[in-house]
Image (cartoon, rainbow, N blue to C red; front, side):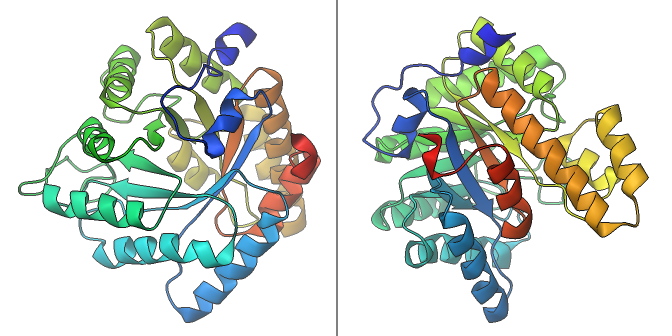
Length: 312
């Protein structure tokens, strides 16, 4: 299995000097993803969380992008927050763009806006169907259908690194893992340089996916995505995010700690820290945290797993 994991540490080509150079260095990368605040109070709270996590020297930070076509306000807040991160942290910014709900001209303008803001790279995503997760996909009038099309638009405009989403358990709409792997190959051919996985809770799922990609000749780094388990997390919600049943040991630990916020947090920190250690020991090029805007949960995981400024 280790050989398959190590395959994600491939030579990076045609990239400007950036945070992604660390992926080829052998030292683990660390990155944090936030969601946009809803109001001024949320913006102040986010700034504090970003400042707290900056002490861990992240290789990049990013902001989630409104997935569905009906989330215009969320998308606009995402853009504004991504731009304002330049005042919150010295870490490179990775801009997210989801094509759902946009026409081509809007996407091109958004890419240009981020490039003018000197972002360090972009994530090209399809996003959820306009009707929400689980609903049939309907392309916006005059818009795009596949993430690879967005990758191509971005690549026409810049040599900056482009990231795409990867799914350890397969995309929910993919008829097979083989089909899912072929989609990744097409994204790579369109110009993607790296991938970040959907939330996962076990290293084995990551390893199986990386081996599938390596056998298919999809040569790009794949960064595993980790979502901290908070005291308010439920088994059902965690399984919804990951797309798979939780490992039995984690499920049992959460059920045993139910109702005890401190115990639940401890279960989450220990599980995530061990997961990070397992992933890195097996060759994953780094880890990406879906922070839920909580430094108080994310930072302890990083400290326990040895992901601080001295990791390089």
